[in-house]
Image 1: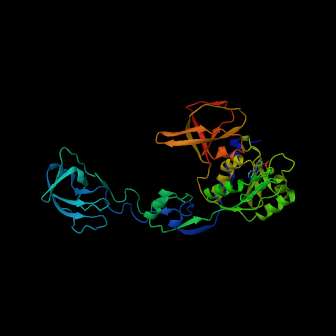
Image 2: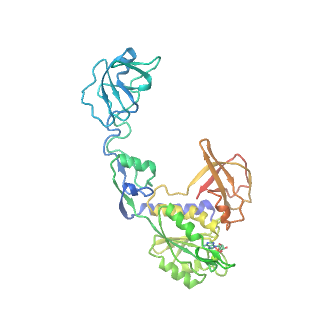
Length: 402
Ligand code: AMP
Ligand code: MG
Protein backbone atom coordinates (compact mmCIF):
# COMPACT_ATOMS: atom_id res chain seq x y z
CA UNK A 1 0.00 0.00 0.00
CA UNK A 2 1.37 3.43 -0.98
CA UNK A 3 2.37 6.08 1.55
CA UNK A 4 0.62 9.45 1.37
CA UNK A 5 3.60 10.95 -0.48
CA UNK A 6 3.66 8.11 -3.01
CA UNK A 7 -0.08 8.33 -3.63
CA UNK A 8 0.13 12.12 -3.97
CA UNK A 9 2.98 11.71 -6.47
CA UNK A 10 0.81 9.39 -8.58
CA UNK A 11 -1.95 12.01 -8.65
CA UNK A 12 0.56 14.78 -9.38
CA UNK A 13 1.92 12.82 -12.34
CA UNK A 14 -1.57 12.37 -13.80
CA UNK A 15 -2.37 16.03 -13.14
CA UNK A 16 0.72 17.05 -15.12
CA UNK A 17 -0.39 14.88 -18.04
CA UNK A 18 -3.84 16.49 -17.85
CA UNK A 19 -2.36 20.01 -17.77
CA UNK A 20 -0.27 19.27 -20.87
CA UNK A 21 -3.43 18.29 -22.78
CA UNK A 22 -6.03 20.44 -24.55
CA UNK A 23 -9.31 21.66 -23.08
CA UNK A 24 -12.32 23.68 -24.10
CA UNK A 25 -12.31 27.46 -23.81
CA UNK A 26 -15.24 29.82 -23.33
CA UNK A 27 -15.43 33.60 -23.08
CA UNK A 28 -16.87 35.31 -20.01
CA UNK A 29 -17.31 38.92 -19.06
CA UNK A 30 -14.90 40.21 -16.43
CA UNK A 31 -17.78 40.38 -13.93
CA UNK A 32 -18.25 36.62 -14.30
CA UNK A 33 -14.55 35.78 -14.28
CA UNK A 34 -13.94 35.44 -10.52
CA UNK A 35 -12.89 31.87 -9.76
CA UNK A 36 -12.43 30.96 -13.43
CA UNK A 37 -9.09 29.83 -14.87
CA UNK A 38 -7.48 32.04 -17.49
CA UNK A 39 -7.04 30.34 -20.90
CA UNK A 40 -4.93 33.11 -22.45
CA UNK A 41 -2.50 35.44 -20.70
CA UNK A 42 -3.59 38.99 -19.94
CA UNK A 43 -1.04 41.38 -21.43
CA UNK A 44 -0.63 45.09 -20.67
CA UNK A 45 -2.21 47.02 -23.58
CA UNK A 46 -0.14 50.12 -22.74
CA UNK A 47 2.41 51.29 -20.19
CA UNK A 48 1.27 51.20 -16.55
CA UNK A 49 0.99 53.80 -15.31
CA UNK A 50 0.38 55.34 -18.73
CA UNK A 51 1.78 58.69 -17.49
CA UNK A 52 3.97 59.90 -14.63
CA UNK A 53 1.36 59.53 -11.89
CA UNK A 54 1.12 61.64 -8.77
CA UNK A 55 0.50 59.44 -5.72
CA UNK A 56 -0.38 62.36 -3.45
CA UNK A 57 -2.44 65.51 -3.29
CA UNK A 58 0.07 68.35 -3.26
CA UNK A 59 2.26 70.39 -5.60
CA UNK A 60 4.26 69.19 -8.59
CA UNK A 61 7.61 71.00 -8.68
CA UNK A 62 11.39 70.63 -8.95
CA UNK A 63 12.62 69.37 -5.57
CA UNK A 64 15.83 71.46 -5.64
CA UNK A 65 13.88 74.65 -6.38
CA UNK A 66 11.36 74.17 -3.56
CA UNK A 67 14.16 73.34 -1.12
CA UNK A 68 15.73 76.70 -2.08
CA UNK A 69 12.60 78.82 -1.59
CA UNK A 70 8.98 79.62 -2.41
CA UNK A 71 7.53 78.80 -5.87
CA UNK A 72 4.73 80.50 -7.77
CA UNK A 73 1.61 78.28 -8.19
CA UNK A 74 1.09 78.28 -11.97
CA UNK A 75 -2.13 76.25 -12.07
CA UNK A 76 -4.11 73.29 -10.86
CA UNK A 77 -4.36 69.72 -12.17
CA UNK A 78 -7.16 67.32 -11.27
CA UNK A 79 -7.11 63.56 -11.80
CA UNK A 80 -8.30 62.84 -15.32
CA UNK A 81 -7.31 66.26 -16.59
CA UNK A 82 -4.70 66.74 -19.30
CA UNK A 83 -2.14 69.50 -18.58
CA UNK A 84 -2.30 72.07 -21.34
CA UNK A 85 0.27 74.46 -19.93
CA UNK A 86 3.37 72.98 -21.58
CA UNK A 87 6.57 72.40 -19.61
CA UNK A 88 6.49 73.88 -16.13
CA UNK A 89 8.58 77.02 -16.00
CA UNK A 90 11.49 77.79 -13.64
CA UNK A 91 10.31 78.90 -10.19
CA UNK A 92 6.87 77.38 -10.74
CA UNK A 93 4.77 74.68 -9.07
CA UNK A 94 1.42 73.19 -10.11
CA UNK A 95 -1.19 72.16 -7.58
CA UNK A 96 -1.93 68.49 -8.30
CA UNK A 97 -4.35 65.80 -7.10
CA UNK A 98 -3.69 62.09 -6.50
CA UNK A 99 -3.88 60.16 -9.76
CA UNK A 100 -3.22 63.16 -12.03
CA UNK A 101 -0.49 63.18 -14.68
CA UNK A 102 2.54 65.12 -13.44
CA UNK A 103 3.24 68.06 -15.82
CA UNK A 104 6.47 67.98 -17.83
CA UNK A 105 9.35 69.66 -16.03
CA UNK A 106 8.32 68.60 -12.50
CA UNK A 107 10.48 65.94 -10.81
CA UNK A 108 8.49 65.41 -7.60
CA UNK A 109 5.21 66.04 -5.82
CA UNK A 110 5.35 67.57 -2.37
CA UNK A 111 2.47 66.54 -0.12
CA UNK A 112 -0.07 69.25 0.67
CA UNK A 113 0.48 68.44 4.36
CA UNK A 114 4.17 69.42 3.99
CA UNK A 115 3.82 72.94 2.55
CA UNK A 116 2.61 76.42 3.43
CA UNK A 117 0.54 78.23 0.76
CA UNK A 118 0.01 82.02 0.73
CA UNK A 119 -1.02 84.47 -2.01
CA UNK A 120 -0.37 82.02 -4.84
CA UNK A 121 3.07 80.98 -3.52
CA UNK A 122 4.01 77.61 -2.05
CA UNK A 123 6.95 76.88 0.27
CA UNK A 124 8.23 73.90 2.21
CA UNK A 125 6.85 73.85 5.77
CA UNK A 126 9.30 73.77 8.68
CA UNK A 127 12.17 71.27 8.42
CA UNK A 128 10.53 69.09 5.74
CA UNK A 129 12.84 67.22 3.37
CA UNK A 130 12.07 66.72 -0.32
CA UNK A 131 13.89 64.62 -2.91
CA UNK A 132 13.61 64.31 -6.64
CA UNK A 133 11.21 61.51 -7.68
CA UNK A 134 9.17 61.68 -4.48
CA UNK A 135 5.46 60.75 -4.83
CA UNK A 136 5.66 60.05 -8.56
CA UNK A 137 5.34 56.61 -10.17
CA UNK A 138 7.03 57.06 -13.58
CA UNK A 139 5.19 55.94 -16.73
CA UNK A 140 5.80 52.24 -17.40
CA UNK A 141 7.34 51.58 -13.96
CA UNK A 142 4.66 48.97 -13.13
CA UNK A 143 4.41 47.33 -16.55
CA UNK A 144 5.43 48.11 -20.12
CA UNK A 145 2.91 47.77 -22.93
CA UNK A 146 3.10 44.09 -24.04
CA UNK A 147 4.32 42.79 -20.65
CA UNK A 148 2.62 39.70 -19.24
CA UNK A 149 0.37 40.66 -16.35
CA UNK A 150 -1.68 37.51 -15.55
CA UNK A 151 -0.40 34.17 -16.88
CA UNK A 152 -2.44 31.44 -18.56
CA UNK A 153 -3.61 28.82 -16.08
CA UNK A 154 -4.12 31.27 -13.21
CA UNK A 155 -7.40 31.15 -11.28
CA UNK A 156 -8.85 34.65 -11.32
CA UNK A 157 -8.89 36.07 -7.80
CA UNK A 158 -9.30 39.61 -6.62
CA UNK A 159 -5.84 40.80 -7.65
CA UNK A 160 -6.00 39.19 -11.09
CA UNK A 161 -9.46 40.65 -11.76
CA UNK A 162 -8.25 44.15 -10.92
CA UNK A 163 -5.13 43.76 -13.08
CA UNK A 164 -7.20 42.43 -16.02
CA UNK A 165 -9.56 45.40 -15.71
CA UNK A 166 -6.60 47.79 -15.83
CA UNK A 167 -5.48 46.10 -19.06
CA UNK A 168 -8.86 46.60 -20.71
CA UNK A 169 -9.76 42.88 -20.69
CA UNK A 170 -13.57 43.27 -20.60
CA UNK A 171 -14.07 39.71 -21.86
CA UNK A 172 -11.77 36.89 -20.87
CA UNK A 173 -11.09 33.48 -22.41
CA UNK A 174 -11.36 30.91 -19.60
CA UNK A 175 -11.26 27.12 -19.50
CA UNK A 176 -14.57 25.26 -19.40
CA UNK A 177 -15.46 23.93 -15.96
CA UNK A 178 -14.86 20.18 -15.72
CA UNK A 179 -18.03 18.16 -15.19
CA UNK A 180 -17.74 16.01 -12.08
CA UNK A 181 -20.14 13.13 -11.44
CA UNK A 182 -20.91 12.44 -7.77
CA UNK A 183 -22.21 9.00 -6.87
CA UNK A 184 -22.82 8.11 -3.24
CA UNK A 185 -23.33 4.43 -2.50
CA UNK A 186 -24.94 2.81 0.53
CA UNK A 187 -28.12 0.92 1.42
CA UNK A 188 -28.38 2.90 4.65
CA UNK A 189 -28.55 6.29 2.92
CA UNK A 190 -31.62 8.46 2.60
CA UNK A 191 -31.87 11.89 1.03
CA UNK A 192 -31.59 14.96 3.22
CA UNK A 193 -35.24 15.97 2.85
CA UNK A 194 -36.48 12.49 3.76
CA UNK A 195 -37.17 11.32 7.29
CA UNK A 196 -34.65 8.59 8.09
CA UNK A 197 -35.66 5.49 10.04
CA UNK A 198 -33.68 4.73 13.18
CA UNK A 199 -31.16 2.59 11.32
CA UNK A 200 -30.74 4.95 8.36
CA UNK A 201 -28.25 7.75 7.69
CA UNK A 202 -28.69 10.96 5.73
CA UNK A 203 -26.57 11.28 2.61
CA UNK A 204 -24.14 14.08 3.43
CA UNK A 205 -21.28 13.15 1.12
CA UNK A 206 -23.04 14.17 -2.09
CA UNK A 207 -23.48 17.65 -0.65
CA UNK A 208 -20.02 18.11 0.81
CA UNK A 209 -18.50 16.84 -2.42
CA UNK A 210 -20.66 19.15 -4.53
CA UNK A 211 -19.38 22.05 -2.42
CA UNK A 212 -15.77 20.91 -2.78
CA UNK A 213 -16.17 20.40 -6.53
CA UNK A 214 -17.63 23.89 -6.97
CA UNK A 215 -14.83 25.39 -4.86
CA UNK A 216 -12.29 23.56 -7.05
CA UNK A 217 -13.75 25.08 -10.19
CA UNK A 218 -15.81 22.09 -11.30
CA UNK A 219 -19.45 21.67 -12.17
CA UNK A 220 -20.93 19.04 -9.83
CA UNK A 221 -23.47 16.63 -11.24
CA UNK A 222 -25.10 14.79 -8.32
CA UNK A 223 -26.65 11.41 -9.07
CA UNK A 224 -29.24 9.52 -7.02
CA UNK A 225 -27.89 7.36 -4.21
CA UNK A 226 -26.64 3.99 -5.50
CA UNK A 227 -27.69 0.83 -3.68
CA UNK A 228 -25.10 -1.70 -2.49
CA UNK A 229 -25.54 -3.98 -5.44
CA UNK A 230 -22.93 -4.81 -8.05
CA UNK A 231 -25.16 -4.41 -11.10
CA UNK A 232 -26.79 -1.25 -9.78
CA UNK A 233 -23.34 0.24 -9.12
CA UNK A 234 -22.12 -0.66 -12.61
CA UNK A 235 -25.26 0.83 -14.18
CA UNK A 236 -24.90 4.05 -12.18
CA UNK A 237 -21.24 4.48 -13.16
CA UNK A 238 -22.18 3.91 -16.81
CA UNK A 239 -24.64 6.80 -16.58
CA UNK A 240 -21.89 9.05 -15.23
CA UNK A 241 -19.45 8.37 -18.05
CA UNK A 242 -20.03 11.60 -19.94
CA UNK A 243 -18.34 13.57 -17.13
CA UNK A 244 -14.66 14.53 -16.90
CA UNK A 245 -14.20 12.97 -13.48
CA UNK A 246 -16.24 10.35 -11.63
CA UNK A 247 -16.34 10.49 -7.83
CA UNK A 248 -17.81 7.60 -5.88
CA UNK A 249 -18.21 7.46 -2.14
CA UNK A 250 -18.61 4.42 0.05
CA UNK A 251 -18.36 0.78 -0.92
CA UNK A 252 -14.55 0.70 -1.33
CA UNK A 253 -13.73 -1.13 1.93
CA UNK A 254 -13.52 -4.85 2.61
CA UNK A 255 -17.22 -5.27 3.52
CA UNK A 256 -19.31 -8.02 1.93
CA UNK A 257 -21.45 -5.39 0.22
CA UNK A 258 -18.70 -3.09 -1.03
CA UNK A 259 -19.06 -3.39 -4.80
CA UNK A 260 -17.46 -0.26 -6.17
CA UNK A 261 -14.12 -1.81 -7.17
CA UNK A 262 -15.81 -4.81 -8.79
CA UNK A 263 -18.14 -2.57 -10.77
CA UNK A 264 -15.23 -0.38 -11.89
CA UNK A 265 -13.28 -3.46 -12.92
CA UNK A 266 -16.22 -4.75 -14.96
CA UNK A 267 -16.21 -1.40 -16.80
CA UNK A 268 -12.54 -1.80 -17.76
CA UNK A 269 -10.98 0.41 -15.09
CA UNK A 270 -7.23 0.71 -14.70
CA UNK A 271 -6.28 1.20 -11.02
CA UNK A 272 -3.32 3.48 -10.15
CA UNK A 273 -3.62 2.74 -6.46
CA UNK A 274 -6.02 0.92 -4.16
CA UNK A 275 -5.48 2.23 -0.66
CA UNK A 276 -2.97 4.62 0.90
CA UNK A 277 -1.34 4.68 4.34
CA UNK A 278 -3.48 7.57 5.57
CA UNK A 279 -6.09 8.06 8.25
CA UNK A 280 -8.85 8.83 7.62
CA UNK A 281 -9.31 7.57 4.08
CA UNK A 282 -7.12 4.47 3.85
CA UNK A 283 -9.32 2.49 1.36
CA UNK A 284 -9.26 5.31 -1.28
CA UNK A 285 -8.89 4.09 -4.87
CA UNK A 286 -7.74 6.06 -7.89
CA UNK A 287 -7.67 5.12 -11.55
CA UNK A 288 -8.93 5.64 -15.04
CA UNK A 289 -11.97 4.38 -16.85
CA UNK A 290 -11.74 4.58 -20.64
CA UNK A 291 -11.38 8.33 -21.25
CA UNK A 292 -11.81 9.70 -17.72
CA UNK A 293 -10.43 9.50 -14.22
CA UNK A 294 -12.30 8.17 -11.22
CA UNK A 295 -11.78 8.21 -7.48
CA UNK A 296 -13.48 5.85 -5.08
CA UNK A 297 -13.57 7.73 -1.78
CA UNK A 298 -14.31 5.97 1.50
CA UNK A 299 -17.84 6.69 2.72
CA UNK A 300 -17.18 8.02 6.17
CA UNK A 301 -17.92 11.71 5.69
CA UNK A 302 -14.61 13.04 7.03
CA UNK A 303 -12.70 10.42 5.02
CA UNK A 304 -14.60 11.60 1.96
CA UNK A 305 -13.73 15.26 2.42
CA UNK A 306 -10.09 14.59 3.31
CA UNK A 307 -9.47 12.22 0.38
CA UNK A 308 -11.16 14.70 -1.94
CA UNK A 309 -8.83 17.48 -0.77
CA UNK A 310 -5.78 15.22 -1.05
CA UNK A 311 -6.38 13.44 -4.34
CA UNK A 312 -9.47 14.67 -6.19
CA UNK A 313 -8.91 18.41 -5.82
CA UNK A 314 -5.49 18.47 -7.56
CA UNK A 315 -6.85 16.41 -10.44
CA UNK A 316 -9.96 18.57 -10.71
CA UNK A 317 -7.89 21.77 -10.80
CA UNK A 318 -5.67 20.26 -13.49
CA UNK A 319 -8.75 19.24 -15.52
CA UNK A 320 -9.82 22.87 -15.23
CA UNK A 321 -6.42 24.03 -16.52
CA UNK A 322 -5.21 25.56 -13.24
CA UNK A 323 -1.43 25.36 -13.21
CA UNK A 324 -1.08 25.62 -9.41
CA UNK A 325 -3.19 22.53 -8.85
CA UNK A 326 -1.66 20.87 -5.78
CA UNK A 327 -3.42 20.32 -2.45
CA UNK A 328 -3.63 23.46 -0.33
CA UNK A 329 -1.29 23.17 2.64
CA UNK A 330 -0.17 25.91 4.97
CA UNK A 331 1.94 26.25 8.08
CA UNK A 332 0.70 27.03 11.57
CA UNK A 333 1.99 26.99 15.15
CA UNK A 334 0.55 24.11 17.17
CA UNK A 335 -1.18 25.31 20.34
CA UNK A 336 -1.07 22.05 22.33
CA UNK A 337 0.97 18.86 22.00
CA UNK A 338 -0.53 15.94 20.07
CA UNK A 339 0.36 12.27 20.72
CA UNK A 340 0.18 9.90 17.78
CA UNK A 341 0.43 6.28 16.76
CA UNK A 342 2.96 6.10 13.89
CA UNK A 343 2.37 4.12 10.71
CA UNK A 344 -0.14 6.31 8.88
CA UNK A 345 -0.11 9.95 7.78
CA UNK A 346 -2.94 11.41 9.80
CA UNK A 347 -5.28 14.28 9.04
CA UNK A 348 -6.92 15.44 12.25
CA UNK A 349 -9.79 17.93 12.36
CA UNK A 350 -8.44 21.23 13.60
CA UNK A 351 -9.13 24.92 13.68
CA UNK A 352 -6.60 27.40 12.43
CA UNK A 353 -6.75 31.03 13.47
CA UNK A 354 -4.79 33.44 11.33
CA UNK A 355 -3.27 36.62 12.65
CA UNK A 356 -0.74 39.07 11.24
CA UNK A 357 1.95 37.36 13.33
CA UNK A 358 1.09 33.97 11.81
CA UNK A 359 -1.43 31.18 12.10
CA UNK A 360 -1.98 29.00 15.15
CA UNK A 361 -3.85 25.71 15.16
CA UNK A 362 -5.63 23.54 17.73
CA UNK A 363 -7.16 20.11 17.40
CA UNK A 364 -10.90 19.52 17.57
CA UNK A 365 -11.87 16.49 19.65
CA UNK A 366 -13.66 13.89 17.52
CA UNK A 367 -15.22 10.46 17.62
CA UNK A 368 -13.59 9.38 14.36
CA UNK A 369 -14.24 9.92 10.69
CA UNK A 370 -18.03 9.85 10.93
CA UNK A 371 -18.17 12.76 13.37
CA UNK A 372 -19.67 15.61 11.37
CA UNK A 373 -20.49 17.65 14.45
CA UNK A 374 -16.74 17.82 15.15
CA UNK A 375 -16.01 18.48 11.47
CA UNK A 376 -18.28 21.51 11.58
CA UNK A 377 -16.00 22.97 14.29
CA UNK A 378 -12.95 22.44 12.07
CA UNK A 379 -11.68 24.58 9.22
CA UNK A 380 -8.64 22.48 8.33
CA UNK A 381 -6.90 19.19 9.04
CA UNK A 382 -3.69 19.00 11.04
CA UNK A 383 -1.19 16.83 9.13
CA UNK A 384 0.74 14.36 11.29
CA UNK A 385 3.62 12.68 9.39
CA UNK A 386 3.63 8.87 9.20
CA UNK A 387 6.63 8.48 11.54
CA UNK A 388 5.65 11.07 14.17
CA UNK A 389 4.89 9.90 17.73
CA UNK A 390 4.28 13.36 19.03
CA UNK A 391 3.90 16.93 17.83
CA UNK A 392 5.07 19.47 20.38
CA UNK A 393 3.23 22.56 21.55
CA UNK A 394 4.71 25.55 19.74
CA UNK A 395 5.97 23.43 16.84
CA UNK A 396 5.33 24.67 13.29
CA UNK A 397 3.08 22.09 11.68
CA UNK A 398 1.38 21.61 8.32
CA UNK A 399 -2.37 21.91 7.93
CA UNK A 400 -4.52 20.87 4.97
CA UNK A 401 -7.10 23.41 3.89
CA UNK A 402 -10.44 21.91 3.16
P1 AMP B 1 -18.53 2.65 3.60
O1 AMP B 1 -17.32 3.36 3.08
O2 AMP B 1 -19.55 2.41 2.54
O3 AMP B 1 -18.14 1.40 4.32
O4 AMP B 1 -19.20 3.60 4.65
C1 AMP B 1 -18.51 3.97 5.82
C2 AMP B 1 -19.39 4.79 6.73
O5 AMP B 1 -19.73 5.99 6.11
C3 AMP B 1 -20.70 4.14 7.12
O6 AMP B 1 -20.94 4.40 8.47
C4 AMP B 1 -21.70 4.82 6.24
O7 AMP B 1 -22.99 4.86 6.79
C5 AMP B 1 -21.12 6.21 6.10
N1 AMP B 1 -21.50 6.79 4.82
C6 AMP B 1 -21.30 6.23 3.62
N2 AMP B 1 -21.75 7.00 2.64
C7 AMP B 1 -22.26 8.11 3.24
C8 AMP B 1 -22.87 9.30 2.73
N3 AMP B 1 -23.06 9.49 1.42
N4 AMP B 1 -23.27 10.22 3.62
C9 AMP B 1 -23.07 10.03 4.94
N5 AMP B 1 -22.50 8.95 5.47
C10 AMP B 1 -22.09 7.97 4.62
MG1 MG C 1 -21.28 1.48 2.35
